[in-house]
Image (spheres, rainbow, N blue to C red):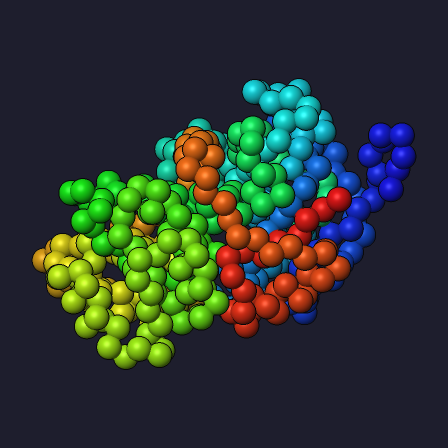
Length: 358
């Protein structure tokens, strides 16, 4: 490392090697920023379940993990060290988090929905195809960045910038479809892990009744800690659907599925009342399907949500700060990255896991 406040020329990074689908801690150059970028000293980066897609085949048409080794991670936060000449609204020393899509125009009709589908066709996801954030220094597009409110803990904030934004947008999209006093409305959270434990916090902040459903005892324990009103493990309780119908009267008014499980999606309509909302948030490796009759006859209303745009990210940060929403993060050292991956593969974690940099 350099001294006297100067940047080092090299840094360590957790990199995915497409050639053998392995991860190595490599030494790589510290990036130089372009005029439309910010150089950020990363304080924290966290692991998302979708990062595991790099190690598995998918049927979603996603081209992941090809070419040269690249740094993993698409959830991060830190402090700005340098501001590009074209960047607007930021200064050195600002604490920021950001979204991971680059090489998009940020202006076309598609970008107003999600930058991944930019009309240029050049969009890339940092951490999935090009260098991400499991490294000490990274370059960030200023259009993707949002300032973290004073008083929010930087060390635990990294998951907000994917899991938090996704969970918040899912809850907001669900709310738009619901009527009545929240205290009389039941929402099922399918998958109470990294995304779900934040979704529960957002739902409870609005006053909804929450039913947490997960196969993992650890995830259900976390769901309880975050205020879920009822908990069910379908693997251990074969009558869970009957019990949910009894609790809710006619079924949940909505269910947000945060999992990547096709069977979980297939069973979700069972816990939803007539004309209830099924929010598609988690992305399985294989396509999911619904009954055309159920959708056509409004047995269920199928909607979708994702990590969204930067304006939505700012709303998420403001709401999270106001209501004390905080990710549960277990921190690892960069050298223990493989252990973190293995723990997520085994489903033996609560909330999120990440790396805290010096």
